[in-house]
Image (cartoon, rainbow, N blue to C red; front, side, top):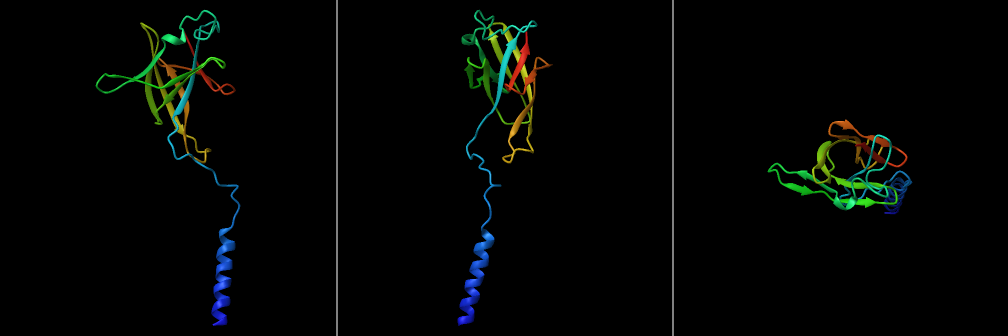
Length: 152
């Protein structure tokens, strides 16, 4: 009986020690849905801000962002205005590619298409935007500010 007790204690000790390891490699991936976000701003050919200037050509109050459903219904997309850092943050569906529309003012609508890839370097394997196009013209991405700029 003593031998079985020692064997049992030793087994539990090995199992316990084997289960202990550093948690440094563990990463917490949120269980809730977090949308993919595209930060966007518009400039003219001379670099003047068309949305966040003192007298904007496209005031943020008039901007609408939507996608079009298969039945041609317009479905509004959630977005926020960041006046301090001068961009519009659009919440996008996590998919490899998609299309949405920005109405800057009545009669001025841009079709925005995007491509996203799963970031293999991200331990949560989340989608990251790799390309945004305004009416088939590639937007410019600033890695420092993380804003896509379109020219009008």
